[in-house]
Length: 544
Image (cartoon, rainbow, N blue to C red; front, side, top):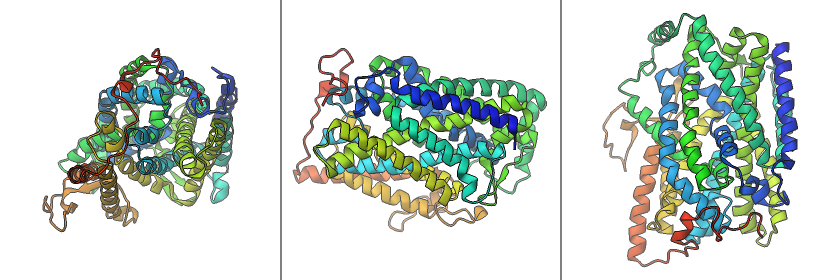
């Protein structure tokens, strides 16, 4: 047991727990018994709070643990996270502003609310809601993977169910203060999380390289390690086979990120359009941090860091690379701060994700199909209960499914959420697609994407199916025809599935329009997409 680290970690964890409960009275509205207040923080967060909230939501414990671990294991391919967060903000700058405006006019809480309003189809809204919930679950589980990696590095590495006990305690505390305070809890805690993360990364990136002979020596050590492996896909430079995968994974991840319900939750909680614009300009500051963070994977190679064997599975856990690097090379007290930064970095996004999934369940399943006349207070109660179920579902995920598998499931989640792009993102600009086209495109993209993922195996880890998201072009077949022959160049499955989705959606839309099929009722107006906070058409917060 690393007692000094554990005491520092526990003290900071206790601080954010207190903040989580106090948050219920921070920027307090009239009541927390309304989704606008509990699930969206009163829709009144300004530029600073939104910056910390959205940053805390997008840059998760998984980012801080898994990106350097991927650099450690695969080299340059792990750097895909950097261009993806650079191209992300210019891509979503205008769509997010439009989404905010139309949601404030109509009181939408979830992306599925918008889809229902835009197309008048509760079935299409249900598809979007279920996709969002299912894609979010493994993402929450991944936050636990990051938290468990830190707990193991501090010596809490038991086997069986008891090995997960510290995780249960941490998540029980998270569940209680999220239940009480809603979105205000992660918004307040995000301040502490980001300050700690910036402090730790800046110290690490200056102190550690000087300890191992500078960056030149670190890159030489990394190259020597990759040269010694039989795989030709790793190295400090990309190869001919993985350049396309790198580019499509970056683009696909960028398109997917703000389709996730938790990303939109942070945006819909902001006060106005200018707040979102300032944030889209300022958030790339995190990308600089991410680039520095990723390089710690190469620093770990120089340091000779070895992953801890997970007693629960009996295999080395690569997610412990960064915690182990910090534990071995920082003074105990500072390692405790670093561990707390990663641990708290798991709690903030896990809370926001569970709230977003709970909002989807409440608005688009419970109120639509179970109790149509639910009052705002009943909706809020249902969302609170659903957020508990989602969190403990994620804990069960970690206990009963190999954590390595949950990382692969997160890649599956990315492929799934991309299939909502035509119905959510494109619909912000045009209603050209027919409802039938959108549903058929979703079915085709989802089905083909899952089939491709199912057939990706990795003999090295003994997995025949769902072992990654990199697909050789030679494996793409259209009714038995292989357009790319036997090409070994790899591509991200999500982009292939999205292209299939769009092609099918276009074809079915043209057929439906030719047949003059009714295309639902659009409850939005073109002017709704440009409304700002001072407009009288903005729906009052917590209105019935």
